[in-house]
Image 1 (cartoon, one colour):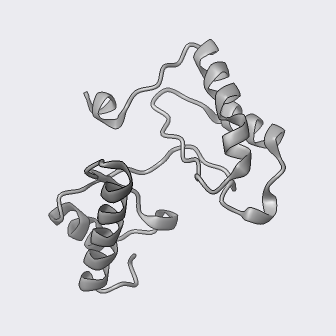
Image 2 (cartoon, helix red, strand yellow):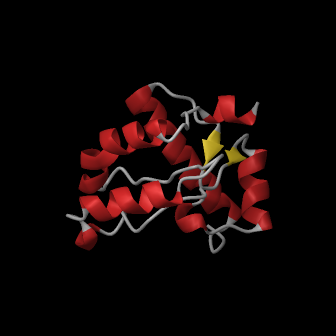
Image 3 (spheres, rainbow, N blue to C red):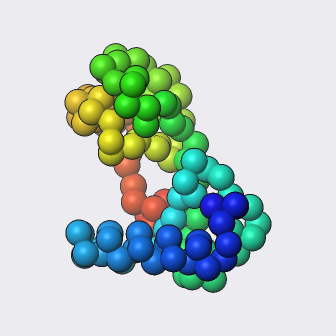
Length: 123
């Protein structure tokens, strides 16, 4: 987003918000900058649009379609890097994530962690 004009950023965010609402009925309040790329300017623009920017603290290269079929790798990366307050980024395009999510959630809970929404986390 840092390379986009203010108008382009607004257009992208509005298109995203509309698509999310039409598909889920959910009103977006949070935004994650694509690829984690942001600037003070882009943060100000999305903030002025009413969004809170949320970054992640744990991710792996699950977005790469050429690197699918590594379910054990994905589990290990997530479990080995879990920590208090972790915000885990998992891409919905990853077939591996859909296969490992149940096991990962179970293991993380066994480790004594709990899952919360961003709204609960802020409190």
